[in-house]
Length: 272
Image (cartoon, rainbow, N blue to C red; front, side, top):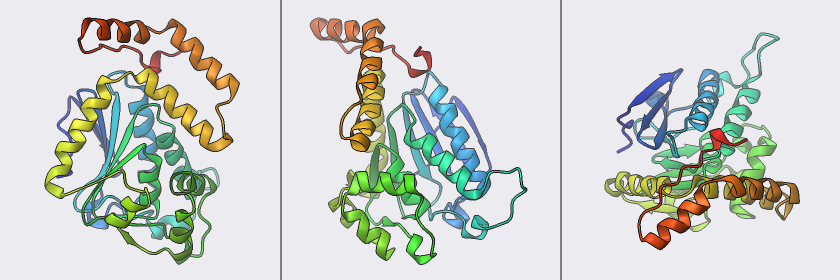
């Protein structure tokens, strides 16, 4: 499992491989010898990969995975406090930029997790919309082992997903198994290794057939609800205006009436 997707368009840099196969974009953290621990350059490349796939009108779903036996062991600690040129963004800056790009990517995102998913790796999994885990995976949020404070944006996303259960992970840095992660809501689906690829492919196909207009609007409004307790009127109005001029609602109704699969065409890259 966890092979890079066959691709009609592919590329990679700095330990991050990007591929597009049909409507599915794939980002692979490709540093298997170090359990895909993220270097400075990998954080930069990850942010760029997210931006690239967000802008690609062919891509309707994005899968994030790790090469080899692990998803991601976190940030490369040897680079965390390394000196940088005065004009260069800090390690934390490029980390947060990449996480923001992933968390706000206006298409459904799936983390396919196997092996270790720790520290920054857990943050990336939480940044995704859905997390599909292989039995035997391990999860942990580890700043308490390093004496650092978890970045505010990452902490907020963890708390929105896990509620009070986030405290245990953050306070103790304890590793939990996939069964416990599933119990507390960190994992959406837990599957044996020989079933996960087929399930992710099925889920990607399903998501790609649905309206990206619905998905993008829902993603943004859910995030706003979790942050503010409600959807701001300006945001609701913006999406209402988009629906009013989009072809997807008419196509959805026509497909329902004609008992056929809809052919949705809305794409975020074309949004005014």
